[in-house]
Every structure is written in structure tokens, then in C-alpha cells.
Length: 204
Image (cartoon, rainbow, N blue to C red; front, side, top):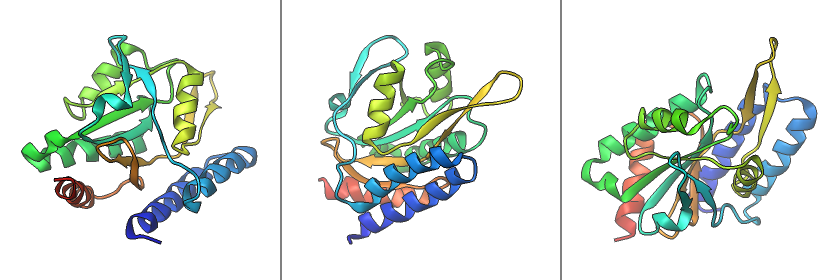
């Protein structure tokens, strides 16, 4: 197993543990299947996709060709994991300085019902001004998330509200949009910066 593959497997295991604390048994089975596909190395991860930005413009993964992509799936009312990871991405880009222009951060909402265009625009920009926030129909989002082996499920809460259980990875894609590795929740900023610099230099 390569170093990047080993890192991805460790990250996947960490995220699985985090999800397993909240998910019901039937949902854990679905999450486990996606996790197994991700860790096996025998299933493709990711691929071309098209969603919409807050202005209603269609955005394709191919639009970012020539830049590394940090891809994150979450939702704006996520209480802790999402804002923590998105803040880490933003800080990593700031620490990269000018080299950070070669990295495109992308946030895909898992909650299109509540994450309106106005909410998405403000939420993503709070972490870094170059964040691209994407949304779409529920079927479109599920198709993209599943291609990256991301599990998510709406969970009803007392009082009529709900939250989203989801696996929380930060995906690193190369300049052609191909999966390179993933980072578990709470990955230290310096680790992320190191990996990004390594990829930026390797692609020169």
C-alpha cells in the first residue's frame, strides 16, 4: 500500500468511528459499505460532476482543471466538525501564500433544503474568500457524494428540526480532478500545508 493510500485508509477509519457514534445500525451498514469501497483501493473515488453555485451558474469539476482541489461535503448548520475542517482549509490556504492560488477550495452542501444560495455564499466566504460553494437537487448531490464514498443521512430531532449525519473527509484532487488522498476530521493545518506543498511542487 502506498503512503497516500495508507493515509487515506487511516483517515477513512477515523471518520467511520466518528459517524458510528451517532448513526443507527441500518445507516451504519450503508456507511460501512462506502467505507469498505474507499479503503479497498479497488473502487474508483470521485469523477466528473456538475452542480450549481449560489448565483445559479452551472459549475463543473473540469472548470478547476490546472489547480489542485480541496473538496469538502457538509452543511451550514453543522455545529462543530464542518466549521472546524473548513477553517483548517482556509488557514492552510493563507499559510501557503501566493502558492495557494494553485489550490481551489470547494464546499458541497449536503443540505440543499436549508442551505439557500444566500446562506451558502455567506457561509463559504467566512472561511476563505476563494471558497466555491455548490448545491443542487438532492439526487444530484447524493450522486456526487456517493461517487466520493461520502455517506450522509437526515436525522430528525425533537421539535421538528433535523440534522445531517455524514462522514467528514477533506478530499485532495490533482490538477486533472483525480483523487489523490483524503484527510480525516481535524487534520492539523501544518499537515495539510505539507501535503499541499508536496503536490504543488510535484506537479511543476
